[in-house]
Image 1 (cartoon, rainbow over the protein chains, first blue to last red):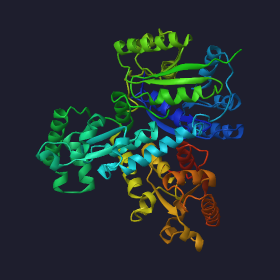
Image 2 (image 1 turned 60 degrees about the horizontal axis):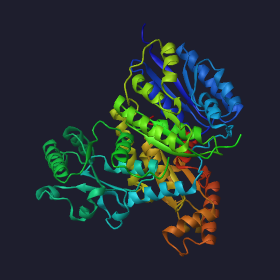
Image 3 (image 1 turned 90 degrees about the vertical axis):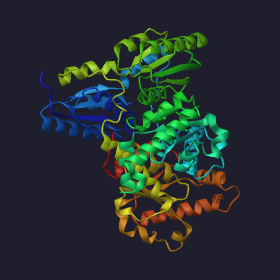
Image 4 (image 1 turned 180 degrees about the horizontal axis):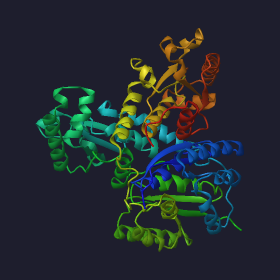
Length: 276
Length: 276
């Protein structure tokens, strides 16, 4: 069979659409020969809005002359039924699981829209915000005051991806992640920054390949010594050597997404998550 | 039927587990009378690891004397089959959609694990990192230098939730979100900070209820004037009045999660996302 060309895909949700998007996106990623044009339709929480969504889906069907793929996480069966009537392959990522769950649990579900991303648990919400504040206050070694409160401390050369990974751990998991740069001074005597000594067991390293690091640093400080390939290679070699000598586990960030780095560190470090 | 008590639920994935977790968590949230103990088992990418996961699930079944719920996004059918053999209600959130998608698309899927969260597209990845850097450089009005490059500028009183919302928009959507506080000086003459004047169309406001704001501020600066309920109420009233007069759309952050705030702003502001 000939692989088709560009194809529309819609993620339809009664709330943010993040769940439909993530699941749909990873399913689409399984079909690498097909190019998709992805559109999220969030807050489809009434029959009226569902009708508007159907119009948009049907227009795409007309434009492509083939059916779009529609992934939905709609809770309300009435709204879901409207979307199911679109000229599309309708993949229901929600209703399909509710009925076996009801049978197993012996209770009916509560048919409440958007329960997942509401603030159900103020403590959980609060701990995520506090974790983000902690990350910001302990970004790039700016403060070492409350490092004893850190769940994890990321180390690595400048621009190896520590900051976004810390922030993601805070936002997604409510984890207090500090980060501390490894700088040329540390490589001269091949010792960890003295302030980190008491927190060795909290340390986790990030590394990166030299060409990628040089590229990133060049955007920040073009044509600097800091960004030169040989300097990047030197810093990375020394940082990896130091982490190995100190027994600090580390990951290569070059081909890993922020999500993957964060989840791996949480998993390998057996960190205690504050939120789901 | 009697609603059951605490029940184990597992999210099993060959990669980060984030997708399984989000979908499973929102499904579980539909059963508000049941309390769940949620566990993520990420990186289950071999039969050996699947067997270890099955042991853990079966132990939970024994402990509860009832079957756990297992949500999986496993790509490899062999690994999936192992998990399906656990003493649990097995809810496959992946395989179940692949076959209708293959039929519709007329191609086989590529059976590649973890494709979704790999760095498929360096540009996309790069724009997320850049967006986070932008958020950090333009947090709390610290710099107004490159506000013309902002996709959106959040305004609101101190501690109304601007920073985490901006960071989430950067990490999740690759959106360059700056934020700028509204402070008592702005309320005296009821004018926007002068620097924001040329960017009116990029402004989006956050508000919050006074008791919640007082609670948050009290944790930061206990017993301060800043945190007093009447002061919070005054600032909020004036900020809302100012935003209304200036025609700035705004959201109440009190009962909305970070995800919901971010998705709503992207949707209502029709912001152009850089990533899925």
